[in-house]
Picture 1: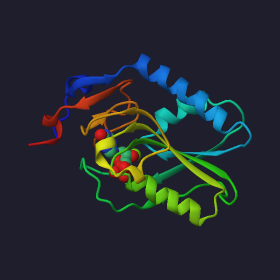
Picture 2: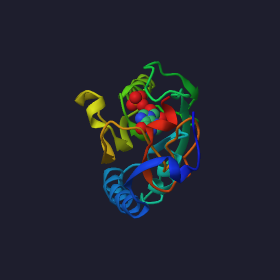
Picture 3: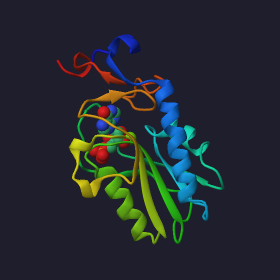
Picture 4: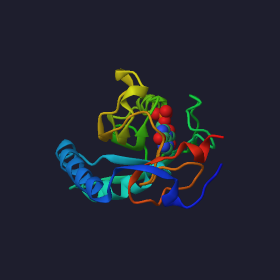
Amino acid sequence: MNITNAENDISEILFTEEQIKKRVAELGVILSEEYKDSCPVVACVLKGASVFYADLVREMKGHVLFDFISVSSYGLKTTSSGVINLRKDFDNDIKDKDLLIVEDIVDSGFTLKYLKNLLYARKAKSVKTIAFLNKFECHAPELDTDYYGFKIPNEFVVGYGLDYAGYYRNLPYIGVLKRSVYEN
Ligand code: IMP
Ligand code: MG
């Protein structure tokens, strides 16, 4: 791991603060319409989705209930193990609720699949997913998210909540991490 200065470790900025703000506002309009007749439990998948979540819920009109869950992460690796563990459960009772799961990125799609199955097993009324980023080349169409902010190619990105080994989450933009940071 060769972390230097956060800005130095980025090879390319994919989405600027301004682009992100505009897109999140658009998603807020869509979700406000989708949930105009209900009060969904909007669940943030910690920690990656926290920044997106905070922006997104403020663009949603009407009532929402907050929830925060945590699933096993990549740790020091940059590819998914495929084994998902729930480390912090939902606080809300899920039965008969409309659920919106908020993720930072859909990659293999295993995390969202795991969470959807869990929520249907708990008899949620509906389950929808939104990911800020969509690595569309990395999962089968049936594992895709219901809503997303931007499609990206299969590169490791950080910022706007996304990390590598816990770092870079506070960058206000989405950037591609230089391979030299995680490859030797
Ligand atoms: P999936 O289960 O493979 O879809 O992985 C989803 C999780 O992998 C996300 O919540 C992220 O924590 C992590 N992840 C996948 N790709 C990236 C990336 O490019 N940067 C940072 N985290 C990533
Ligand atoms: Mg995550």
